[in-house]
Image (cartoon, rainbow, N blue to C red):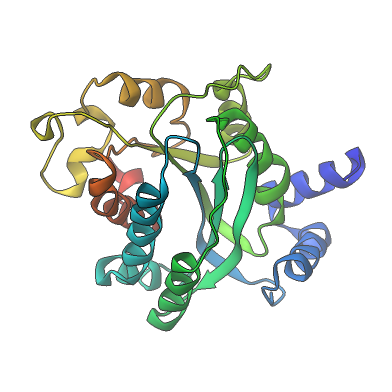
Length: 265
């Protein structure tokens, strides 16, 4: 993509207005297979970015995919999705390690049937392999390739990043620099650090509101996510106590991200 095309896309998804926004939406519809009606709006455009680096074996990968699928099928999540003023969201997934990959292109979810169909795609998603935890590279990919192709006007755009380690690719572009760029474009970046070997008592176990920024623990990976990953209005970090706890964490995170709970605290 040339500089002019990239700038056009960035301007369109930042504004969501006029012929420029419509043209970008039509291009995105062609590339994602999602049919867009002129002027269509959604409550949230949610990008879920999942770590599949070398530390993620087949069982851990299965726990993540099954956790996301079950979260999409959860009644509380579905209610949050359909209960917004626009009655639906756009959902996309990126898996990332050495390189990012579009695992699920933009998909509209506006009913229980839509949610279950998306969950089935997640469960049958082929495994991407990789060695390193290249978070900065993934965030650059989202900023350049995924967010500019949102095929409808979204009231809010959320990038949900999960992983069990810090960026270890020694990128010239620091994670926080790309995070700040995304935030400047109106994206809220949330984090789900997977804390291995952490005593369960170190995590909050109350209602979902207890996971918002003011009441989080100071585990090193969680602190790194708060400092370098989290950004934008209403952003938060919600940790998982190991991979077996990922399903619980992503379910609560989805409720916060597609509702207005996070922004109200």
